[in-house]
Image: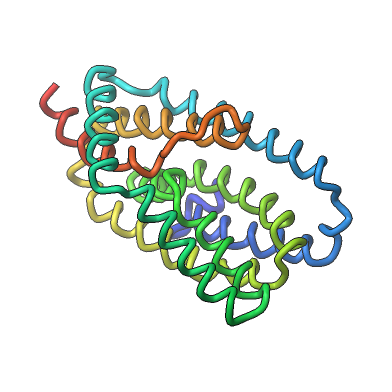
Length: 232
């Protein structure tokens, strides 16, 4: 991990390589994985994601600010319809392109949405940009690499090409976070980690099929926590 923490957007570079390698494996041997085994692998990802979320959530300094930010963020996200808009956009793109082209396009769009749209991508990029700590994106990269094996075996070469929007999107967020770093205090960062950890726990429970949380609607909480952490 020290290698990737010493280069700009190292977490995104690792994520890029993991999806690239995973897609290659999926194209060659992934088709031999039975559906039951694929589900069990996703369960492993869910359990590990919960562990990552808990370890982050325990870093919070002001639980009241985190709770209020999470609630206000969810209200704002629900009002704006972030989750529904993202799902609708994804469905429209997939339906439109799939009707005209082969599974290459379906695989590209599906994998791009899976790897780019989510709180772990945003939180990991900010962690890397603010603290030069790529650990979240490396964890995400391992998860995405495993998922890319499963998806590329089913949807083909298009999954591999999702690495290009991935590196542009996450790399851009990492650069943005590095610009904001001088304005983020240690306590604010700890509370960002806290609220982010709770969202990542939600990713884990969703992967396990225990919940169907609309995590994208919670993302405005990351803005509220910067303000409320200062106030509290």
